[in-house]
Image 1 (cartoon, rainbow, N blue to C red):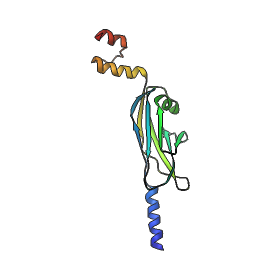
Image 2: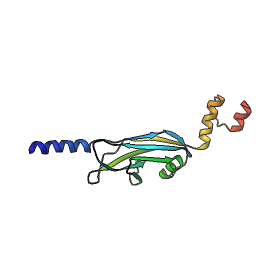
Image 3: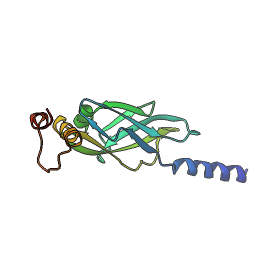
Image 4: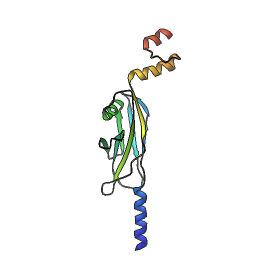
Length: 145
């Protein structure tokens, strides 16, 4: 009986110390694009739901029983209460057993670019301009148009 209790205790400790991982795809997006967030959990644990939170604000969570979230860049910005361009840190944890919380994942950084930032990035690569000033579509079009 003591051996059974010891093994059960070790298994519980192993499950409790499992740290989930957040996966996001893509890491950089526009406000109008979508991002998929996944909270990876252990396969041998019955997970009740996962919680995602942003910038260490554990009281501002989004819950998902599938441990996945699909959000637009604009929704991420509203959730974080910031304006683009912005980088935010995404974390997750899960509930298992009798609503026991897991440890929390390390952060993954997600960047939401404004429409001007994305266009500027495209102009740099498509026009091959080497400058630190911002470009507009008319400058790019006039240069290559």
